[in-house]
Image (cartoon, rainbow, N blue to C red):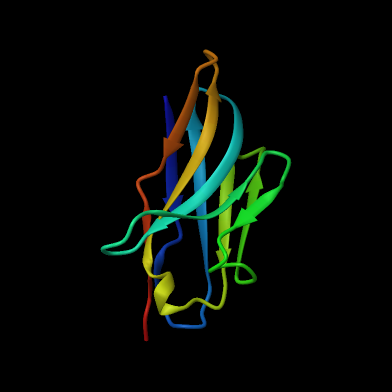
Length: 120
């Protein structure tokens, strides 16, 4: 019913930048909170950043001041601008969205993930 597709991952050197995008599609009535999480090898998935429909944001301490989350409600898309990347940012990044569908069901939808590797 709802699909989330991430893009923008890749290999970047320490100190570099990447911009991730995640577009939601399907039978969407409205989208509440959208967010990005990541999972590094051998570690649990952790929340990186989230943003409400009105634009209120929340960040993990490890990325504050380096990452910026934003969204375009007209495109059902959320972005994650990542600057000053560190090797410890290496992970698979997943987006998620709290979606109310056109048949008025609520679903917490997740994308398939995009890999970010920070290495020299």
